[in-house]
Image: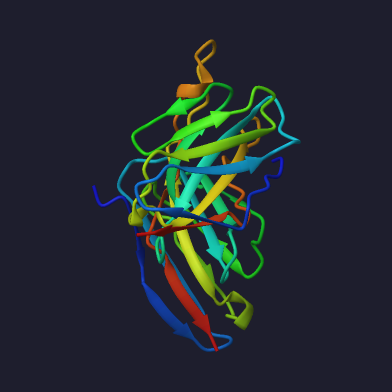
Length: 123
Length: 112
């Protein structure tokens, strides 16, 4: 398995340009996520999806759009790039499952698998 | 999700145990304690998680206080490869989205 792959690795955009960051996973995970990480900070959630055709906003969605037409792919679209969108973007996926009734919750595993990131600079 | 508090940085010697603390005094009964780490120039990776009992896996151990207001990630023998930012995250499975809320984390430096 390749896991979570992201393209491109690096990109420089001019202010006002648009681009799509690609993310794909081959683990048949139902949940997928987009995070951004500014220098020296933790990750912040932009958008997430609980399955094909379903997306929802995270903590910092403004300036971004997503779609989820297949289980495998979850592209992130930047329209009208701004310097504030200079960041490292991480895509992640997980196989979320609700603990079965009566089962010990300690053994539920839904770890998120992260891609290598895309470093975006907007100038 | 309830917030967590971690030291900004810690230092350790190679091949010695490391105890990374996390305070979460407002934790709720349905919050799980997750740990992720982020190696330099990489995406985060899962380390371990638990609810009430201490947990062990091949990477680390998680010790959870009896009142659950704090926890400690234990690396039994630090290696240079363990130098990373370690994030302690509370996850409430009653919330939709299954999202992770990252704080600042603890930057672990390992000295040879």
